[in-house]
Amino acid sequence: MQTPAPFEYERATSVEGALAALERLGSDVRIIAGGHSLLPMMKLRLANPSHLIDINDLAELSYIREHDGEVRIGALTRHVDLLKSELLAQRFPVFRDAETVIADPVVRNRGTIGGSLCQADAAEDLSAVCSALKAQVVIRGAAGERVIGMEDFHVGPFTTAVGAGEILTEVRLRVRPGAGSAHEKVERRAGDWAIAAASAAVWTEGGTITDVGIALSAVGMTTIHLSRAEELMRGKPPSDELFAQAGEIASEDCSPSADGRGPIDYKRHLAGVLTGRALRRAAARAGGSATKELGS
Amino acid sequence: MNISMTVNGEEVSREAEPRHLLVHFIRENLGLKGTHWGCDTSNCGACVVLMDGQPLKSCTTLAAMCAGHEIHTVESLEVDGRLDPVQQGFHECHGLQCGFCTPGMLMTARALLDENPDPTEHEIRTAISGAICRCTGYKNIVSAIRWAAEHEARQEA
Image 1 (cartoon, one colour):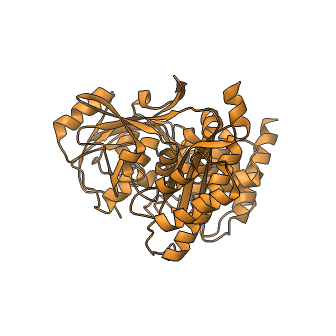
Image 2 (image 1 turned 60 degrees about the vertical axis):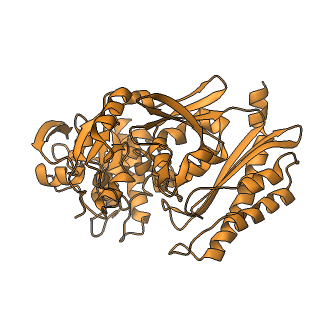
Image 3 (image 1 turned 90 degrees about the vertical axis):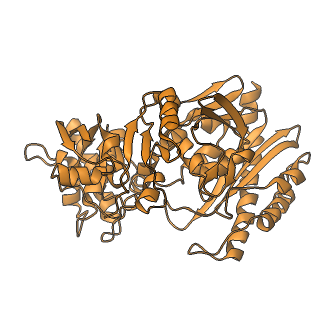
């Protein structure tokens, strides 16, 4: 029987209360939301917090809404709500692509976007999704709020910019015209972690790519941001040749390790193919209904 | 710590450690052995119970996190000797062999039919994709859930 080592438990009734508890309890304290990453780590003694602060009652952190040209997602929003959200499916369909293949429906009832991002597991899908969309995240501490980009959020494997005494509270996605996005993942069986996955977002205007975001899961120590491929694509018209070139860069710029899910050359190959596919679907969506709806 | 919740319609309150998992609270503190404890890693789905009507994996949830919530276990399905249509479906369609995965399958199926009373085969297979059965090959489980959907609709008509 696997049971976590002993710890003290308390339930937060407000974000301020959770911040005060973090401050009071010191560095060994962890926030728990869905718990589907943290509890397995605690069972294996990979995480040994002295205190857990349960934030599941903080309904104020569970929402998906559009506000001032941004879609804002509360950190406690669960995978099932991200999957079902029509607003996200319309604005950023990459979310529905990814949520269909994240874990299984029962796990998706519990896991949250904040927990997924803060776990900072390189194999996790939403980190790539948010990176490709160039999301900003809101981190709150006793001294107030700060907003940082996804490019600065993951500072290493399982490590984020969220400091001691701080909580991730919100993910912000800027709504821009001509947007399309898609997620492609290959897994060994339903509900498994990716062997490799690619998220892509494309913004087009007058047949030209004005901006693009590409990120990979499970093929490096952290989520991989493909900035070299993004640079290549900006200012060019979308084409299969361009997507293939970006795929080649993806194969070169990822750094997978060999494990039970496959050898390195296979994973590099997958990273390239999935990048090409994700870009093609993202660009097709950018040229489709999303543009018209935003323009109307 | 003292943990109170509603289990199968009854208010319960027990002393347990914060690290106590819901599956152990249900099995050991409450003595309800219908819920099975399987892989312990949220992969197999044998431990699925409903919290506030939604299925969750009780091996990866602390009992303390469920305090104040409403839990339903497999024991809640049969009422006054009458099997739930989902249970009857597993009986009719031979939806189990060894039976280890069955409590989780039944609760996952119950939650599916509560939300979607007429699921397609694909929707059923998606719903149970987080539940592993090593005996049946799933075919009879899918048939059993379809059986339950059809008979539930007939009962209500």
